[in-house]
Each structure stands twice: as structure tokens, then as C-alpha cells.
Length: 331
Ligand code: 5AD
Ligand code: SF4
Ligand code: FES
Image (cartoon, rainbow, N blue to C red):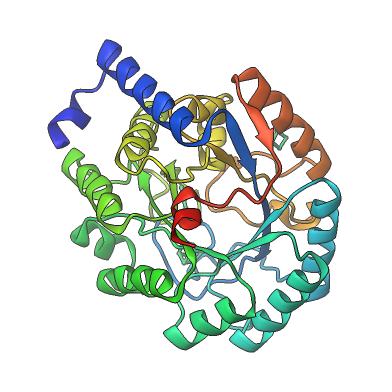
């Protein structure tokens, strides 16, 4: 696998992306599922070296949306047609399990036909269990990198083994689970990327988020090289072939790395887009990496923009819940 990854170019690369495209058509046809992303707090107790939200970044202006404001975002998103809401934040302990349970209950009461995805980082079994019981359907927790030494170098406040343990716990509890990783991390080898793919094959997640590493100027990795669009497309394609029924987003990081990065991801096996539903006033503050796209665009603009992009790439927007085939065959 490592050998293949380091020799992908020209014709071989085109054939790989084409095989991934065919696998995606077999599994999901030309549907592209849209998820409304609400970035509800940029406060984080962790200190990941690559991330602009790291606690060590004292220059970032911090915000936290209140439950009522989050519900307003859902309302706007629902009116625009979204039937999945992704509530994402840094690891912000102000949002206790109790508060999240209340929030989830309200969202599910007001929008019973919408799926709810959480992306709030590592919590204990009891918390994950109560959030699931309150109505959360899915959970995103990227494994970030399958290389133990690289994971340790990048995450001074977290443990490699915990990460894997949390992903298994989420699956056991019943969530549709999303794992995933960054491409082009400093020091990451082709063998490390091969391990990322083999880990996905072993875990069999419902969702797989893959994006290029993009340096942020207020982090220790400011002077490192970004991951490339080409290498990231290769990983998306290989992930599609190794977990054919997964839901794979064309990530915002791909759209940031290249103006047509998301369209190209859709053509290399991706089948999900996650536009921002956060209030305009906070968008620029959820800055994981510099130059993030859509920070100056209204939710309605993104909704329209994506419709065009999906069509131009040869696909169609599906505004349904878009549950994973893996999940549907389990239930
Ligand atoms: N470049 C690319 N992706 C990043 N993430 C965090 N910081 C960066 C960065 N500098 C990703 C992580 C995290 C997800 C929400 O964003 O993989 O899980
Ligand atoms: Fe916090 Fe997530 Fe950023 Fe790490 S990657 S610092 S856990 S927001
Ligand atoms: Fe946000 Fe294009 S997706 S403006």
C-alpha cells in the first residue's frame, strides 16, 4: 500500500480516481448529501499542534453560542432544506452532558425528521451513552493519524490509545461513526498513510473525513508545508475503495486548498458536503487553519453555491437525511 501511495501519478492516478468514482456510483449513485454545520464553540481545552483553536493560541477571540442561538441556526438550515445538523465545537467543558442533552432534546423535538451529528471530541462512556439516548444519531471523531509516534508528537494533551478506544465506544453505543485523518502532516510518510487506510478498513466507520493539513499562522506548525490536493484526492479514492459504502465528505479544507478542491473530491469518491450554518458573526473565529472558505458568505449563499458546484461536477444534491448504507443494513 505504501509503495502504491508513493507511486501514484499520471495514468495510474487517473485510473484510481475513476475506480473510486465507479465504486461510489455503485453504492450511492450520483447523490451528494448536504449537512448543515454549526460551529457552536471555538473554546477548546486541548492543544493539538496543527489547530488554530488550540488552547495555547492566546490570540484567537473565543465565542460560544447559546442553545437558543444554535436552535436559530437549525431553524434557518431547516428552512433551506437541510435534514442533517452537525453540531461541532472544540472540547468545551461549559457544554456539560446535561446541557448537551437538553440541546439535543430540543433539536429533535423541533426537527424530528432531521438527523443530528455531534462532533465535540472525547468524552466518557456515560456521556456518549446519554447523548445517544437523548437523540444524537451520529458522531464525528477523526482518528487524525494512525501513526502512534506522529499522533503523540501532535497531541500533547491526548493519548493515541484513548482515541481508538473512544471510536470503538461510539460504535458499541450505536452511533453512526465518522473517523478520518489529515494528509500531508509534517513527518507523515506513505507508510503512515497506508496505516490510516488499513485502520479504516478495520474500523469500518460509517463516515470518513479526509482533508489536507493546512498550516495556521498562530500554531507551532506555521512554517510547515501544507498537504497537497493530489495526495488528498488519492487518499479519498483509496478510502472509497476500501470502505465502499462509507459517506465521505468533500471537506472545507479541500475547498480551501484549491478553488475546485471539493468538486475534484466528489469526482474521486466523495459524496457529502458540509456547508456552514453558523452565524456570520462567528464564522471567521472558527479558524482551524488560515484562509478558510465561506467565512464571508451567508448560509443561503452557500446552499445555492453548492447546488451549482454539485451540478457542474456531474452529480445531484440529495437533501434527505442520507444515512449510511452500513447503518441501514444494520438496522
Ligand atoms: N489543517 C487541516 N485540518 C485541520 N483540522 C484541525 N486543524 C487543521 C489544520 N490546521 C481538522 C482535524 C479535526 C477537524 C475538525 O479539523 O482533523 O478533527
Ligand atoms: Fe481542540 Fe479539536 Fe483543535 Fe485539537 S483539533 S485543538 S481537540 S478543536
Ligand atoms: Fe460557501 Fe460556495 S459553499 S460560498
